[in-house]
Image (cartoon, rainbow, N blue to C red; front, side, top):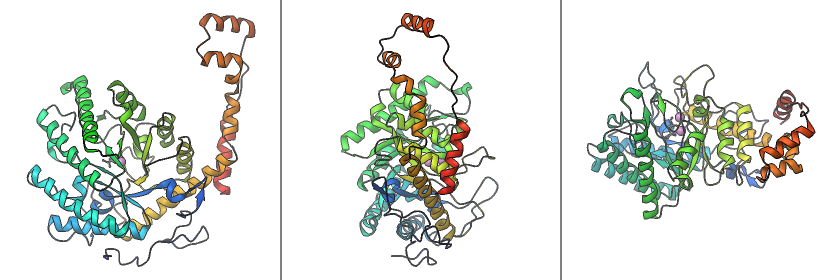
Amino acid sequence: MSDYFPEIQSPILFEGPQSRKPLAFKWYDANRVIGGKTMAEHFRFAVSFWHTFKGTGADMFGPAAWARSWNAGSPMEIAGHALRANFEFCQKLGAPFYCFHDRDIAPEGGTFAESCKNLDAIVAQAKQLQNDTGIKLLWGTANCFSNPRYTHGAGTNPDVHAFAYAAAQVKHAMDATHELGGENYVFWGGREGYETLLNTDYKQEQEQFAAFLQLAVDHKKKTGFTGQFLIEPKPKEPTKHQYDFDTATVLGFLRAHGLYEHFKINIEANHATLAGHTFEHELTVAAAEGKLGSIDANQGDMLLGWDTDQFPSNLYSTTAAMLAVFQQEGGIGVGGFNFDAKCRRGSVDALDLFYAHIGGMDAFARGLIVADKIAADNALANFVAERYASWKSPLGQEILAGKATSESLEAWVMQHGEPKPKSGRQEMLETILNDYLIGA
Ligand code: XLS
Ligand code: NI
Ligand code: NI
């Protein structure tokens, strides 16, 4: 194994909560069984290639700030180094999966054909490294937002030429994902939206986007790719308004265009908060329809209004998230928890990538442990069941079975009068959650 991380000479180990060693897991114990599944199975943690190996610490006010040993040589040599660094990192960290965009793992060429050739060469190397290490591909995707040709969108571009280019790129990225045994394929509509309605035909763009997704559905069928298709909602950034605003909007769009059965949702914590929701809200909406496909694990900053993509550290949020994941039969399924997260500009060392991932894995492991205790004790579920108990009465059953009428309810209310006020007990429940968090 190559040595891009010489400071880490052995895999990161689980040492337990008593350990004070920063380069050790305190809570994430891959083999620990919780609710019939190992922690490794609950999470299926993935490293995101773009942040971890292409991130430079650059921001709107300053250029690249990080020196990385893998950034050496020609663009294709750098791609080879970065790829090997990825597998070394995943192995040393104990992350079983990685995720990529086509343009992260291989450089874009001067022509479309050259870009395809670059990608194919890197995919061959990745296949070998997957075999050597046992690290697998959680998902692949196409970057249809960075190149200036996508300034006005990819599938929603007013120019059909750009649409065709994006469709061709998606086809090739899907084939690469298929070749690598990727378990999912993600669509994030980075520029599928608008800057101003003054130049936008909204209805036309919706139809284009449906056609764009349908092409991928058809290609999937044709090639026998069995990976799960995921759409990743985000309300804005880079565009002012993105069409895949949030989970409910995406599910409605899919239904309206006959695409519902083909897609699940990839939920990112920071995108949820940008949409004015909590992370657990988005997870709950998806899980309610069995559509929770995968998670981009990160967190935003309460004081900043953009996608800061920070590593998750908020235990309250990871616990609430795991309670929501439990709502779906089988949990995350063939999805996983991908750290779509980056270190802050000031965290300049490659070693910071380890601290960041270890912290994120521990934060979710702890959330899982607490959520499991809450669930095992029915600490919240009993209250919720009791709150809706009246729906089990003859009246409730009649309404749910569609047998009640407006007249029958009018007659019932005439007879029974006012409902009695009942407390929702919010503060009591919040305290119960805190007690479990502190006690765990
Ligand atoms: C950007 C998105 C992106 C997707 C993959 O905000 O989170 O990284 O996860 O294209
Ligand atoms: Ni993401
Ligand atoms: Ni994001």
